Image 1 (cartoon, rainbow, N blue to C red):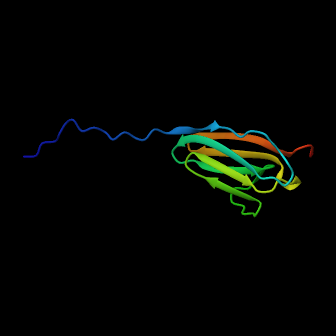
Image 2: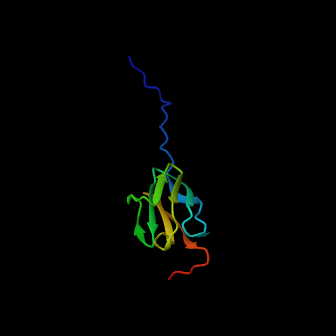
Image 3: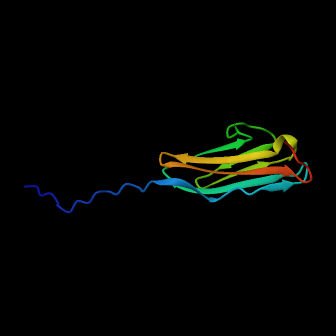
Length: 116
């Protein structure tokens, strides 16, 4: 005869959490031709999708000699190797999963210059 243990416990599902930004982007005023690093910390489960935007254009998968983007499980970093008029402007990070979306944005500008 076989007996079934009546104390069978269900395996709990991993908690799902909407994305949140734990360290947002900060404004940067840099010297022309200098190097700037922008970093964002975030959390959420399940796995998050991270996108970087520059002046409204998705640059996440765009490879250039001027910038490097790194994405880990809880952080993302962009290194802008040379600040010029072309690399200044609005930077935004969007983090999302099936539970929601979180955003942070900032401006990068050259010391003493105002660009429209």
